[in-house]
Image (tube, rainbow, N blue to C red; front, side):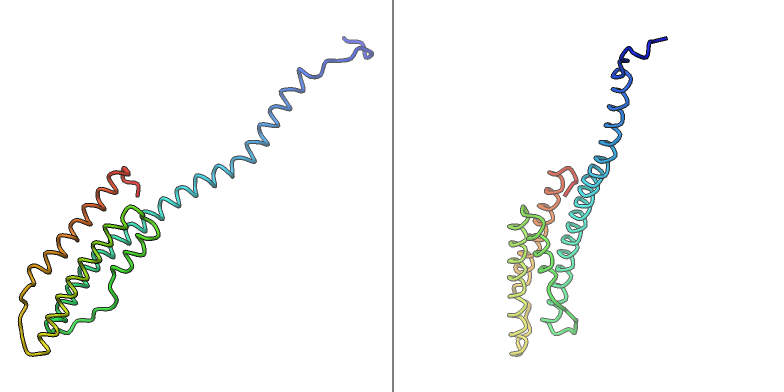
Amino acid sequence: MTDASTPANIWPVLMPVIVGGSLAILGGALSPIVSHILSARSARQARRVQRFEEMMAAVYEHDHWLDGKRHISIGQEVESGPPPIHKARSIVLMNFEELRAPIRELDLASSRYQHWMAEVAVNRSKGVLSVEGFQAAYKIWLDEFTSFQDVAAAYVRARNGKV
């Protein structure tokens, strides 16, 4: 038994309690921060994937829209609506810097194809029923459409599936 007048060395007993308590407080404070950072990163990645899918869907919708426009130019009744390429371009401008030039080229090819359709419509209104130049006009669009698909696929591959 120790004498009450002798000072007891309490630090060997107190130090593990202080260190353990400090680690528990630190873990309790840092855990929500780390969890928030990781979930925010995951949500950001999921949002980019969603935007990429919307962009690709808009490009395909635009191809369908152009087909409808062509039917209108030859006199068939089809409801066309606004061009989906604008949605695709806005998604690219906001989210995918590397795809700006390819989507611009796709839009330009679309405009050239639409120009041919407008010429056909004007000629039809004058009584001239001809679709001359369709092969060349459509080939420009189709080549650029295929090229954009390849560029988009390469973009995904280069990033190991993470857009």
